Length: 389
Image 1: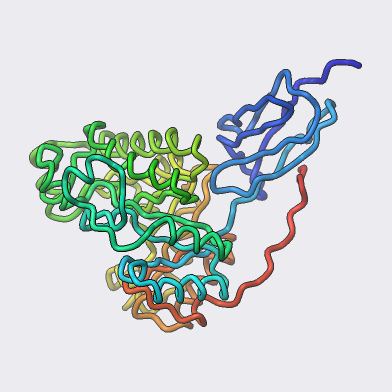
Image 2: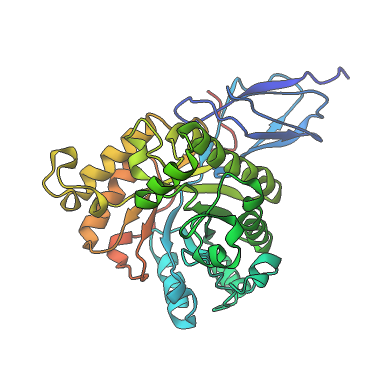
């Protein structure tokens, strides 16, 4: 029998864009796609294989030792999520009701915190720094919560607030940049949030979402610039390096890496002083989540007297700005405003995300959602085992 040919090909999205960083495995060999989505596997044995990438739906195939499809189509995993805030996660009845509602509606995922904006860790952790600084305040059994989420067939995402951390700034003042912000330019300061992320992944979360993964804005930002003189390239470089390190640690454990960003950075040409320039940050993660809250936009944006009255228009404009600048092979899943809005207004924003093929996450800090805003679950379209272009 003649030896098998090298398996070579290209992994692309449904739109034909390259998907870098996808893993192609078959017959005891594996390789990752390059920046153009191309791969080559030598020494693989014919047989079943799979193409996978965190944040995307895996595609199975069978290889007979001959030519591979020129292009293999990989599709992003589309998730629709609700935030389960700490006040809900800590209450057995409210948590059960939230999970039941998610499973009965169009939601496919839930997000809840490992570490929030206060710097407090809300469930028991073995991470030594958290114990040493006295920031562990267990409010619920995270393993039991994860088990309930998985029983309902939901995707589990945990949010870790990174560089704004009042509790750490007090407990470890030498790590402080200014105010309640930790110095992101010192890689030693990355170890604590990364340790929490690794632990969360090992406990069963599917995706780690980093929030406040940036430098401070507002008056604190100005004080930092005057004192330290950080330039845009340094700011962006350090945020990207942190996210790349997170991906290097979490991918082998099977977790996708996500980052929350200000929605304005999709429209602005620069990093807005916070280290979030959209092209570079999106290239460093699996999932990019702009926070599109029309209530946060200034009057006059897009020529609108009150942007908060136009959730569809503001959401559509932000998503289109981001799509034009997003790195290839990245999943866009925006945070959408679910506070102060009627179900009809929430649905208007959701419709814009879904029209563009994106999932979404609903933000309501008290965890109150009307099922009418989320919608009814619909069957996902079937995807063939392998698609060739």
